[in-house]
Image (cartoon, rainbow, N blue to C red; front, top):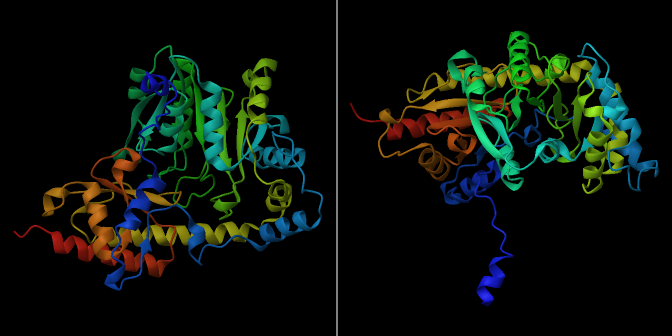
Length: 413
């Protein structure tokens, strides 16, 4: 009976893959005795490389807020008023309507914003439509919320656009939302204005919301400019998720936002607002002094800082594509136009003794001390994700080692 009693209290962790979990295992597999320094092209943290540094403006803003001694106490659970106002004004620059500070809720990074979005939509029997490939934190959050996940495919030969026909097939009356990630992680795509309108019209037809993950917002360096999904908030209600992390190169500061981009006011109904506020009462938001620095960070950052980062990402993406084109078993179907990562297809028929993408990445880590992410971690078996937010020299070295590895395992004709 004792066993039966305890069984009622067992908590089972959802068996979902996480990027950090797999990267940790790959690092453990590195042969530290081979004399090669580790080149990590697996994690989207550009701050690890000296060519990507945040602006002095951001550092000074944090120091000023901390030294003022005005921000050592608790902030309102939804965020400091001046922080919410600054984020609303920042996002409104690209919208045909104005967001108010009441539309903005400050979160601990974009990851917490993802959790908030799914928590707000959770109900018995609910399902959510997620992109494949995508960001696995959505699946993990959905599993904890008991929300069914349904995957729609992104189309590699159409710039990783959403398969809108699949959306209409997958959705039913229990579908609460579809998620889009733009600019794309893990694919490096940037959606056109026209495609975003088509997404909005499809969602409106199906009477579902759009969760727009824009953590890589404005990090677009190809021919397609970044357009926020909120531009079509009058067609369909949009939950916009974002953060300072990528554009300002400060992922460890954990400053994100959950924004109701909804000029028609569905999210302004008193009961909805009250529910969101109550949920924020149980969350720990970002440090108060980091929040207090946000208005100064947004207002004073020079465009030259953003341009320097965009130029560097364009260069490193070009290096990636060029070096990958020299490796017969690797193919990039669509050159990255934004974000910091790209998907590369493995042709296993050209390799000996490599069974799949997991095997490829673990052997690569052990033999070459190069870390890249197996595609299975983001939903695409026998692909890999390579992060190009690295300094050019490290990128050249890492891709050179990948080329040597592939030559070593190449099938002899």
